[in-house]
Structures are given as structure tokens and as C-alpha cells.
Length: 114
Length: 115
Image (cartoon, rainbow over all chains, first blue to last red; front, side):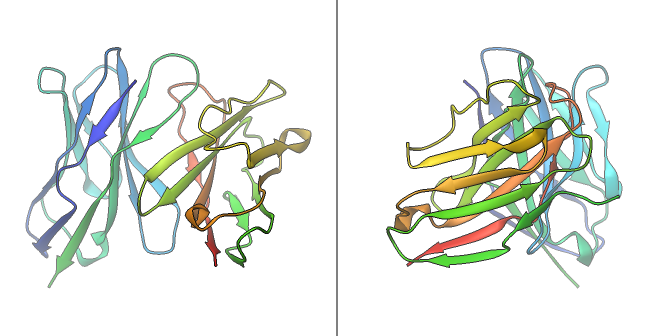
């Protein structure tokens, strides 16, 4: 079974500052990794995913994440945030067998202030 | 094109009543998923449908929960004899093929409140 840990429940940051949202996972098998964003009163939207290949993955809205197998991490970064990035961010993992059964972390609320 | 839609957007019910939640996936998507988002448990997988295959029900929390998918399209999640701990946002997602590398597209959810 897999599990995901997002240690930061809330990350406050000023507009145009860089941000990193942390995600660590646990699994005994190979995994795929995902970051989803949830804006208020909306469903989840995929930001990016790591399946294989380059460990640096670029996604939408200027976000990127780096897969680190030795540290079992998949941290999300953005060099300069906007007010509109205020949302809940979820890291998720699934194994590479069968269907995509996503296991989510508890989420990190990113609060961007002017 | 149209995304995943869910209805109703909000549902308030009394303890002990049955409720039905509906999901319309993206046209042409063969896979459909239900998740539950609650304060206590976070985001949890409930059930997965792929084409005409038997669904994977491994995430359903009790036998009060059931789901069906008619004609490989619309899905209904039914909760019988609702309890207060069933209060949550129920999210539906669909994906093109259902494989492990697919992208799931989520609907806006149904907020269920059990009084």
C-alpha cells in the first residue's frame, strides 16, 4: 500500500515570492506521482504528473516538481507566485499496476497575500 | 468540451434517509471514479468503473454505499440510511482509458450534509 505525507497544512507567502510545497510518499512498489490543485468550490485539477524519465516535471501555471527516489519526495515549486495561486494543493500517488487508484495527501493550503 | 458534471451540488438530508448522487463523465471516457473528501479522512477513493467490467469497490466504507454505472456513462452513488459521518464532499472523476498513467478529470463535487 502507498501513503503520502504533506507536512505543511498551510503555507503563507507574499506575492511574487518563491514557494515550495513538500510531499513525501511511501511505497514498496514503483509509483506514479501527481499534484492536483483545488480552487474554492471547484473540483481538483491536475497540475503535473511524474510517470518516468526526467525527474524534473513541468506543469501548468508555471509550477514544476522534482521526483527524488532516494528521498521519496516529490516537492512542488513555483519561482514567483500570484494571488490567483491561492488554493489547496494535493499530492497523490498510485502504483503502476492495474487502474489509477489515487492515494492523496492531506493537502496544503497556499495563501498568497499582496 | 463539457467537463465532468455532478448533481446536486448540495444535498441536505436527515439521518436515516437514502440519497442518490449523480455523475456525468466526459463523453467518451471509459473510466469513472468516485472519491470522498471529508475533514476527518481527507480524500479517499471509493469505487472505480471501467467499461463493462465489474467495478472495483475496495474503497466503499460500508455496505450502505453502492454505485452503478448505466450504459457505460452516467453513474449514481447511493448511500442508504445516511449517518452524520457520511457528511462530506463526494467527487466524481473520469479518465479516457482508465490506465495507470491516465489523467483523471474531476467534477465540482456534491456537498452532502446529514443532519
